[in-house]
Image (cartoon, rainbow, N blue to C red; front, side, top):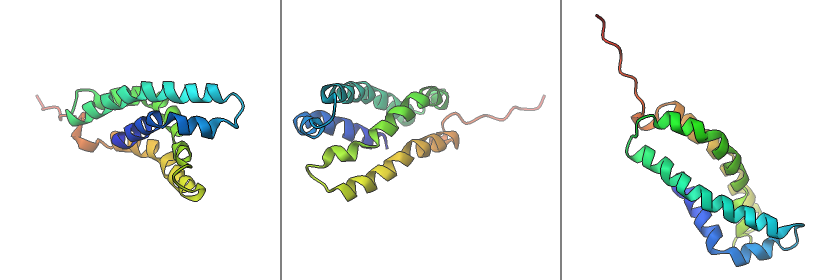
Length: 129
């Protein structure tokens, strides 16, 4: 999922001219485009951090993820609309179908972390004395 998000951020940043064209009918289109650029630029290193935690089974990875989850949840829900940025390439129905799956993905990530996916933060049972 982390690679998917990075793909959306990089894809959006690589196609700013097309996205600017899509946003042009919106009021304050320049502000919306700036929000897109800033959030993508911030979230790329955040995703690298989450990936590094998972790959290297970092200590307190679950704790760290849960600390940033409210921030990630908010931005992930905003970025779940990103398939609509591809309207130059796909139709509205496909963008809507992809968006519905993306709305669910932050909950899936959090559930996997809480269930201990990857064996991160496994508790060692206390030995009796």
